[in-house]
Amino acid sequence: IGDVIDKGPMLAHKAEEEGVAVAEMLAGKPPHVNYDTIPSVIYTYPEVAWVGKTEEELKAAGVDFKAGKFNFSANSRAVCNKDTDGMVKVLTDATTDKIP
Image (cartoon, rainbow, N blue to C red; front, side):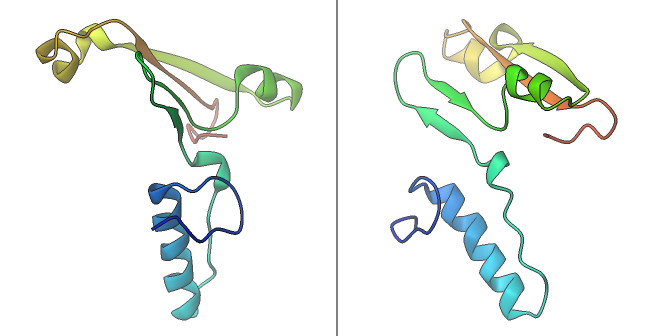
């Protein structure tokens, strides 16, 4: 999965979503893939990952958004792995809570 692409990176989770869109189309439903919500990752240590737009992009577009943070020190997997440095930051539409 992910080695035949039309748009964007060759990622398995992106290809799976595109496969769902094909199945929707074959079933007579409107296909949909939101390429802004497909995650990207850099496999370094520590890992860096992101999905959606940055705060700067949202501000420039005039989108009213809110930001939330979750520290890895409160994540059970991180605690078990003794790797609690870092956090997750989520930006959502201030009204709908969807990733803009």
